[in-house]
Length: 94
Image 1 (cartoon, rainbow, N blue to C red):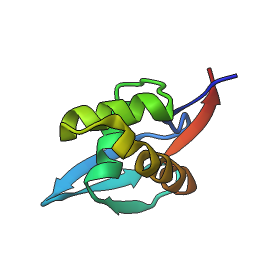
Image 2: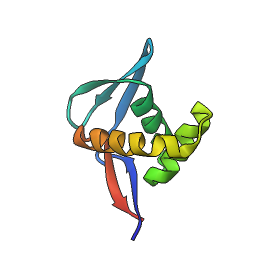
Image 3: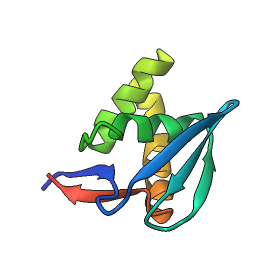
């Protein structure tokens, strides 16, 4: 079974760019998080309601950075775990 990621289903996120960072407010938790470029890009990829695997997200980030996706895979996996701990994304079975 393949696993993917999506924005937390019980949440509405409000995103606001602040310089090189993005502030994310979670209605579900009432918390605000300040994210740098990579976590912000991952959230952006998922914001359309897409349900993507860590590999699909690494490919999407690599396109923006114009680098091989293999360079981004470990970082994207770490970011997804961090975003999940903040309750901003959740894993699902595809």
